[in-house]
Image (tube, rainbow over all chains, first blue to last red; front, top):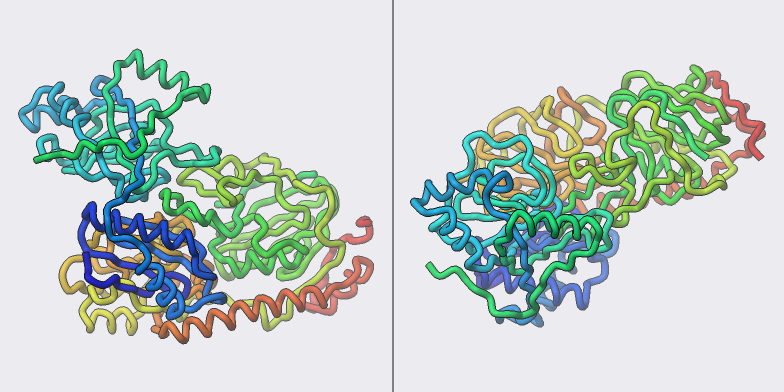
Amino acid sequence: MYDKVKYLPAGDSSLTMEFGNEISVKINGKIRNTVNAIESSPPEGLTELIPTYRSIQVLYDPSVIDYGDMVRSLEKILHSATDGGVDNYRIVEIPTCYGGEYGPDLEFVAKHNNLTVDDVIKIHTGSDYLLYMLGFTPGFGYLGGMSEKIATPRLQVPRTIIPGGSVGIAATQTGIYPIDSPGGWQLIGRTPIKLYDPLSEIPVLLNAGDYVRFTSITEEEYLSIKEAVEKNEYKVNIIHNGEVRLNVL
Amino acid sequence: MSFKVIKAGLFTTVQDKGRYSYQRFGMSVAGAMDPFALRVANMLVGNEPYEAALEATFLGPTLEFKDHEAIAITGGDMSPKVNNNPIPMWMSVYVKPGDILSFSGVKSGLRSYIAFSRKLDIPLIMGSRSTFTRGKIGGYEGRKLADNDVLGFRDSQLSTTKGSFIRRDFIPSYNKEEVIRVVLGPQDDYFLEESIQTFLSSTYTITNEADRMGYRLDGEKILHRQGADIISDGIVFGSIQVPGHGMPIIMMADRATTGGYTKIATVITPDLSRLAQMGPGSKINFERVTLEEASIIYRDYEERLSLIGSHIKEATFHISELRSLNLSINGKKFMVDVNEIK
């Protein structure tokens, strides 16, 4: 993390607040706290914030505020934002059916790492993943904290269509495809939960700063949860400020 | 209250300002590629400037009206016609039930905007009616229009019963070669000094890979100091990314919200509209402006738009006068039936 936040111009109506040049839990926490602080007393002319791994994209209306005044306003707010850990977070449980038609690459991931299929599931469900940022497609979360023991390179030839809900691994990253899309990740399972529902008031289930906890379910459970989700009767299990299980290498 | 899409044209979508405030969820903004043309089209028919309208690309649609309607067409010139008679652009035009609006291939520019005085009946999704085709949401069923679609209107009253036009000198001209002004950054320090000079002094050509998401350019290679990849951060309308191959990509309306390539510069807002009217083969020379200059240019641009807005309000004519006024504007003969509207 930089000692001093860098302000970088991004055209006439946006700037980048850069906190560092690495992916770290500490920077992510600082960004989260800063976003909360900006939103609780937004400078006049602020139009939108896009938090990322290590920066906040600040969008503003240049007919209301100019770059210099925006930087000064943000600096003031920055001093009121805490450096410390995030004290308010959610652990979101994602029930996942591993292997079979839902996770066609599970066996490859196991073989690649000299593990059994059960080992891979145990390791993947054994720790919680911090959601650093959303991007790529609506609702796609970049998760950090996967064990290197199950790291596997991307497919050499990407699939043209991956069903929404697929859980995959790409190198040391893991993630969930919110909608049907092309992609090259190794697919190890699928969740029946909707991560993205454009017609819902809250269109995206996961937010930056959440922890994701995968739980292993059977195909039977998958189908019954899927039915409940479609009837709008399924309630996602969310634990507030619970104990986070971090991957210890 | 509706109209029928007889032919959809090449790529016709419903667009408004775009889906702002949801980018933190990975949601692309979408919205009109040429916001200037969208805003003027709406003002001409008495709407709020960012009301949803049709954006037609390269080849416009053929529409059949079921009701009396005031429409306005702005942006690229695709030779709009009503019942095969040419109609003026940048001016409100009244149509009656059974009238057919049609277009030919584009003569100048690339995208036309068709605004309607009755407001399109398109559901608001996350605060916007814009079509985001890659995400299959917004607009008409989340897709471009197809032959035989029927689009409804959400109010029975016309927004205005008066016609209007804009002064000729406010109508932008679209060229195949343009100077596009940029502010350097956010990652200009990732590039060699001489490469920034290359970027600013040579001519770049828009390739065939140019769509609502982004424009890939071809020209002199831009070299990085070390590596083109950064840890992903935010992208805005007009961000110019330079991946390892050294060729710039300008991010447009359907851009992803974040990306992992260095961004050498950002196109200033007032020049995005002209850029949106350029297509494959067109040439761009980038010109650097400072943040202070960009801020002045932006304010001038907004002032010009509000001036256009007040001119439009003053320049109204009653429907019964429409015929003579048509003749006096372009010196051309137009066949617009106007008397049925009450």
